[in-house]
Image (cartoon, rainbow, N blue to C red; front, top):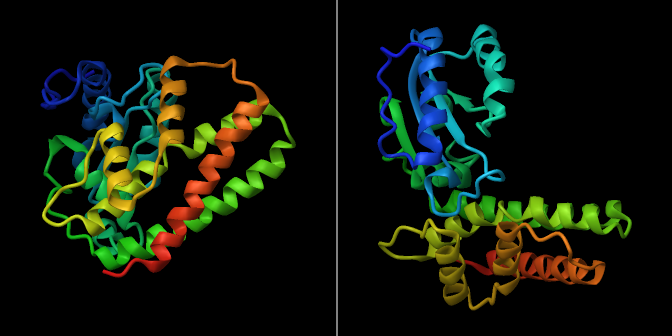
Length: 254
C-alpha cells in the first residue's frame, strides 16, 4: 500500500471508509497516469447498508481503458471481494456523455448517491433528460415483468429459488423509483433512503407498497423460515405492482 496517496474518505460511513481507502491507495499508483476520478456509489453511503449483505460499489473514470488496466483491477478482485468491495464500474468521460441517453436511470442514481474520494468531480453536474428516463423506465419495467415470469417458471415451485428470485429483483426497484419521482416532482430531488422512496412513491403514484417494505424487513432480519405459500404471495404482489407501474409509465406524459 502507498500511504502517500491522497484519498478523501472522510465523507464515507465507517463501514466503508477503511476498506475503500485501502483499496484506493493500493490501486491508484498503478493507474495514476490514466486515472481521473474515483467515486463511491450506492447503498454503502446510506442508512440502507446491511453489513454482510450489501456490497460497496464504485466508479473509476479513466482517460483510456486498456486490457492492462483491467488486469490490474482483476488482480485485486478476490482479496477485496472478501471485504464486499464489488468490481468497480470503469468508464471514460467520453463514455459518460455518450451514454446519458442510453443509461439515464443508472447515471441519475450515481448523480444522486455518490462521494468522490479521488480526483475530479464527474457526476454532480450531469444533465439527464426526463424524456430519456421515461423511455428507460417503461422498458425496464416491462423487462422486469418478463424476467419475473421466466424466473417463476424456472423455479418450478422451489421455495428457495423463488425467494432468491424475489431477493434479486428487489434492489432494482429503487433506481427505477427515484427516476420516476425525478420525472414528476417539481424542484425536488428524489429521496435517497429506501423507506422515504417507498413513502414518496405511495403518495405520488397512489400505490401501496407494503410488499416491498416486507421484503426489506425480511432481508434485514435475515428471516429464512417463510413457507412456500408466503413466498408465493410475496412474488404475486411484486409482480402485480411491477405490472401496475408499467401501465402508469405507458400513460405518463411529461
